[in-house]
Image 1 (cartoon, rainbow, N blue to C red):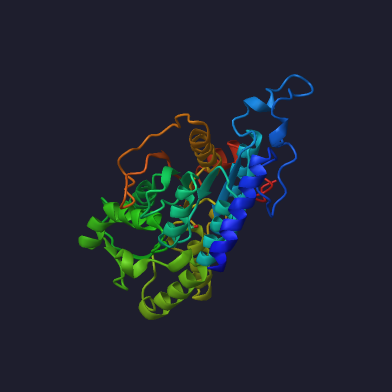
Image 2: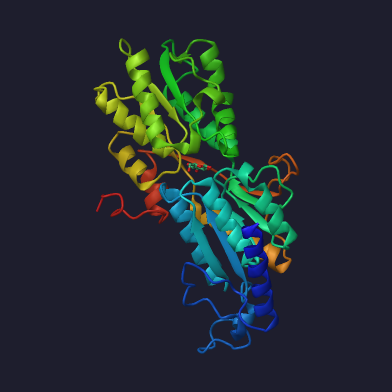
Length: 388
Ligand code: BGC
């Protein structure tokens, strides 16, 4: 009830301010970027005359609320920073908030953004099942929503979805293992364990589906042997993508099932899991001699260093600059009535509607191509990877 009253008061205040012709952009915990134009400066041409007048900036006088899951993993920090910079360059004011994987915190952050009447919401959900009520509030207030990286399930309030081909991520991981171990031709058998993503993240379900579309036949014919027997999504998913849980599981698997035989393949859906498994393997005495093939996702700085050092075999490179760019075109579309670029209108059914999507392509990165993919492309500097 209290929340309701606060919401109504905040709405009334914002509307009153807007009616007075003041800057309706919300008060934020973060300082707006210095170069973002003020709402009432839209008529003034740039002083040096080289830039378009602020009025021509699609974001002039508009604000965007970005709700991100956590800063505990590097990728989301980059996603948030890229999107903020790109939106601010177009004149939008940006409220960027992280909820540290606390579902309730994310709900209240979005409630506040709705109360502040942002012009658009961009949400990368922690648990999208918990967001349906606040999404309905946003819709009722006329605030469009763009789903970022993770699909928003069970809602009709989402306009667009920017992501990577999430089943494709799993397929690329599966195919990497298939090629590296020459599964199609070998007469050997290899042991494998699976560490899959969070059950409340639609991406994790799709990733597992993609992995299994490649590896299931090899489990069926005995080329791959999973000694724990845990291969289904339900048996291998790790809540909130927890590195600690992955480490714990790996320790238990190694002591319980791999005392007499080495683990050959760690099929991990996330760089964080790869770090946890690395620690477990080192503690169990694995060395260069019997180090397993370890997969990951996100090509984080630490993962890339581990790839260079031979402690992780591959990761999935997802260019967050590109993803942010696609998302920004969607924000512009909902804020200015333009058409964003869409390349998928069939795959992402959120149980209520098929959300028009732009899917970027995931790419496998390993020791053979990190230089070209990550450094030459400017994604990381050689210094960041301790190479210079
Ligand atoms: C993202 C991955 C990320 C994972 C854990 C997923 O939804 O698609 O890129 O590794 O969340 O943060």
